[in-house]
Image (cartoon, rainbow, N blue to C red; front, side, top):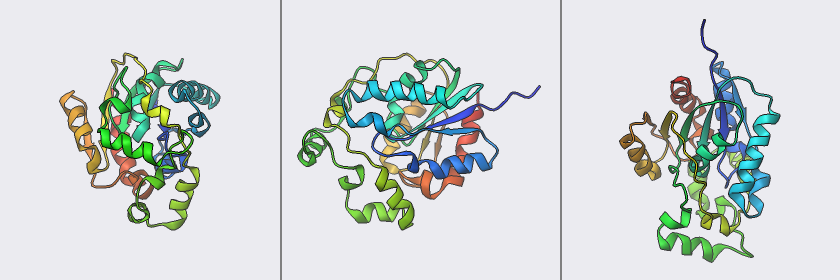
Amino acid sequence: MVDAPATAVLVHSPYLGPASLRPLAGALAALGHPVVLLDLRVTVNAAPVHQRLIGLFADAVEDSMVEGELVLVGHSGAGPLLPAFADALETPVRGLVFLDSDLPTPGRSWRDDAPAERMAGLKSISRAGLMPRWDLWFAPEALSAMVPDVRLLEEIVAEAPEVPLAFLKEPRPTVAWTGPCSYVQLSPAYAKAAAAARELGWPVVELDSHHLGAVTSPDEVAAALVPLINRR
């Protein structure tokens, strides 16, 4: 008997929305792979963000009526929360895949490990305790270089929420995960995280892409993900 493939649950960054992973979901489906794309944006507009994110994640997976084993794929800021997401589910989780993201830092906040000037910069552009939309952190030409399709970029930008600055100070959940993990690096910015994953003995795939490669090169990213999703 052939094992049924695990369902890939795609988890977008807290700073973006499902549009940032929708082309990837389509590419996985085209390969015949079961996939669920979540929308967790409503949880990130007030603190405590971690607690709200994890609660809605579990509800959304349950509401999807997915059956069988799951593999959680977390992009960017969702990656460090994957162990907590897995722990919140009743459905069995086969593995975790970190997609151009930092690794978990249980009990430590983003601020604890970020350069002081980076935190100061985000604080300086925040208003009323809210950080601006992710796209406003960069020069406009930086994003258009990654996503030259104006329609796609507008869809991604339209979904980007304003996240409380307090999110960066919240300790990440302390959850033990001992199951399989793997890593897909899309951009040079996450070379250090990919190297750390390799040192942990995880399978690591490096693609010559950029942070939003799941939007502009979904077929390539899907092809890299499928063997990792199916591994045991």
